[in-house]
Length: 298
Image (cartoon, rainbow, N blue to C red; front, side, top):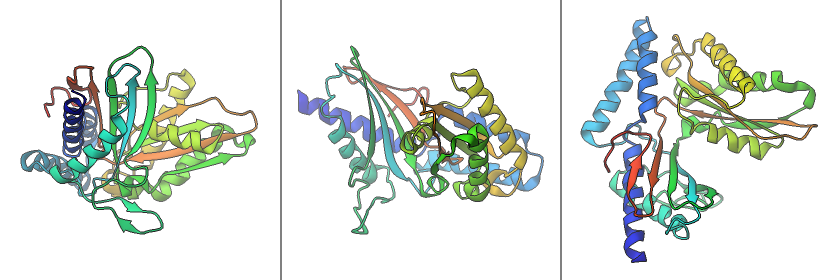
């Protein structure tokens, strides 16, 4: 029975991973449509039209919507009573191997020091798996994110001097986006982590990219800062593909953790316009629902 369940779980996750590389989540598609409607210059409209033509062909031809299918990252929220809790890590590695062939996904994993491409998108600690265990629960929710080279390039983190405060956080974000943001294929989703140490801030900035567009920080001041940074970045008018336009970003998401009084750390992660983030829920009977892509059938 365990082997049957394991094979079924691998098959679901392989199909889920492949599907997410070809179809953007509902909220991202809606946001891109909204941003396209705002543009009033021919060049910006051409770029958005090309994006939607790309998505249409990806669906019709059953191919990834971007040739860079990234490094696969999974963020797992698993119930302590989920029947395959002990098998998830190995199953996800096998699912990536299967998706690499079936999708297909570009071979992107290069082993550090050896400088050797593994050829199957699996390597040392990859796919990256972030864990949260939910007590007294028998289902699992898994976020999949394809971290491409372009959208990863602006990523950075730093511990600021305490007197720099939140103004220092804003300056750090704007300096990085105006220097490297164009490499991440705008319009961008900007994830910001604020914490007391650099590794926590960096991790939170990536988790911020998983939030649905249109959601806000749980703290009213945090939500206000999100809005201020988003409005400020849009005033720069980076535009689709970086060729100028009404908007620079799809959104700005901030996640935070309590910090030491002497330090304030900030992390920055960016998602490209082809923001391949997906969420699936699987119950103890291995029945699934794609929460990010309503009605999708694998």
